[in-house]
Amino acid sequence: MKTAVANEHEQGWDFEKAAMPYVDSLYNTAYRMTRNSEDAEDLVQETYLKAYKYYDKFEEGTNFKAWLFKIMKNTFINNYRKKKLTPHKIDFSEIEESYERVIQKNAPDLIKDPETDIFQDMMDEDVKRALDSLPHDYKMVVLLADIEGFSYKEIAEILDCPVGTVMSRLYRGRKMLERTLLEYARKYGYIRGGAEPAKMRSRKDETKGRKKKESADDEPETTEPEDNEEEALFAGAPEEEEFDEFEVEEEEEERFEIE
Amino acid sequence: MLCRDVKRVVYFFLDGSLGKHKQTDFDSHLRLCPDCESRTKLHRRLREFFRTRVERLSAPDRLKTRLTRSIRAFRAEWSR
View 1: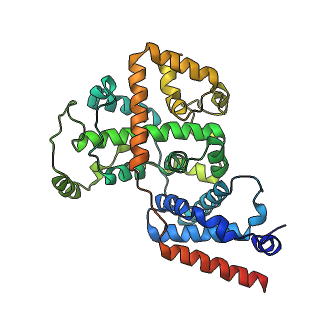
View 2: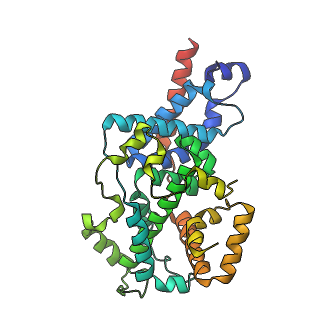
View 3: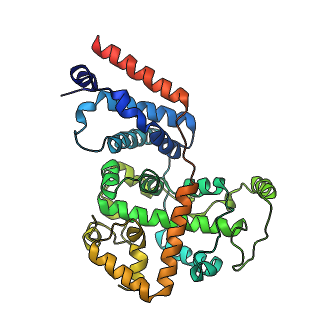
């Protein structure tokens, strides 16, 4: 058993030097998970102390950053369970259908000409809201893959789930994210044309109008909490049960000849 | 590969995670199907847009100080 302290003592290894380069990445993800800076800071601190304390569990030669993320995820889940927050339930067939509706109805010109400059004027706040609107598990895989650049295998390791589950969550998470971005693009007039041509407004008016509109109907449908069926995710239930309508699981992994 | 299959694997194609054969099938399909080609471009654009525009937060300095202090405190306690 080799703690970080013992390791530092014997080899002059510096935990701070090794772990500190990841603090921004961890904090960024922690903030997305907890949605406030105070909890995010506490979560990162707890993660670092645990990593320091249990360094003997780290397998040399594996990805240190991924290991830190895994500790953070576990810590978050423990705290999350304690607080007994209600996770979200999602209707996936609804996501698929409404994605097609959004594309066909609001952005037919995008299909004809995907180079059309549609998102140029979209505000950073919209992008942030679109990401935050994703249910936790889907937001996590999108963050880990598309922001932190982890491979499917590394994400599977961090989240303690099969690679197939990572893929199915990525598929759905990205689809929900795209749908929300397209919806915002139309709603706030960034997409010209479509079924209901949106009025072009100045950014100032936009911000003003938006503040007034902060209401429940402003949120994308996918985030509506329905019941706590998905709580099973956090209780270590078999993953197969969650995605019975979607086949990107273990078998698909092979079919896709991943990595 | 059918249009339906293209839709299912498009993100994995964009990740560069399809196996060689699937990748080739995908490419051949896109050459013959303008609709799938456009959709793929749209997915790519949305992804690039998201990646460049999503806010990346930096840890506040006070957190870095907190971390350094708590690790040092833990180390001191452990070494005692």
